[in-house]
Length: 392
Ligand SMILES: *Cc1c(COP(=O)(O)O)cnc(C)c1O
Image 1 (spheres, rainbow, N blue to C red):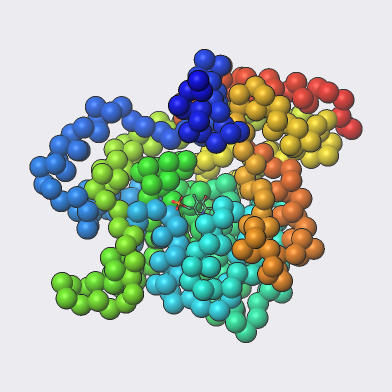
Image 2: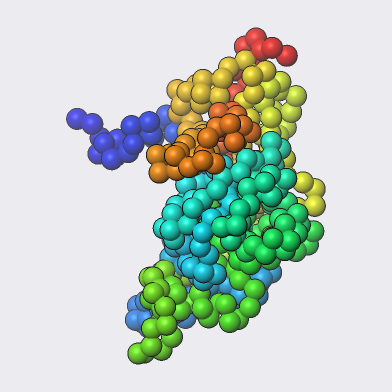
């Protein structure tokens, strides 16, 4: 009989613990006994959601940690994105990137907004700021760029374009927890930035998210919108949604924050080990974050270019054969999914760089508890492929 775990797992992720399956990521979970006192407090208070005590504490702690002034917690990042667009009353067309997690564009769709895809920059893999102006039409109201792999977008150039054309900017900063651009939080750019605290992210509350905005009035509006539009017991001022973070999530976030230093050090060590092992490997291009930005090592993407002896998909399969679950983030492009592929901006001729990179990119396992000998297994498989005869 098949083990229950295997039947509940997607086919390509069937895992055999004996062999030491290595996932692409694993949520960081502090020791359980450290979480128990928080749960006891919740049980005593019986205040389980709706801007509870831990919720208020986590908003304050995150503002402090991230260096921002106004932050609203959400039950997940997708609802935060949807609500950010509502809060700014965005309509018409929004310019965005096809090289992201699908929720970025879904948030536009759920607001009845038409996504307009522009190509990405081949080095940063973020929306190419040089291609934004050509995509602007009279219907354009906002830009929705993504700091992909926590590498900040060209925030200054985007700001200048937005100012010139009178557009709003919402950053999908789901990857960019804690990142700074020249001493300033990356979340401080644009009208709003949206974070995700999903289990796969650098800072997680199992599920969770937040909107960072610029002033107290806007935060109040966001807080109303995430609570059905209520401003007091009997007044509903807008067709809001239920996007509230509960007390268990918030408590877990408070505990998680205490461990962030450890998480960062562990991620940096794994990142450094990969860079050392792959330096000089022909045809394998590692992603670099510019020197004026800090790194959170959320992902370890590599480009498997034609000079590498095997294709991206062959390397992916080879890793799978060795129980290593590398992931092809982001493949397919969002613009290739059925909902979006009919859009004029979704044609591959409009997105040559994103199309190529989505065929070459592979994210290797990185998470704080990845053991050195397990990382070595990943490295060994990649280096074994690299030693087959390439074109370099
Ligand atoms: C994770 C992620 C989201 C969605 O966040 P959830 O908290 O999972 O809803 C949105 N955009 C990007 C780029 C993401 O990586």
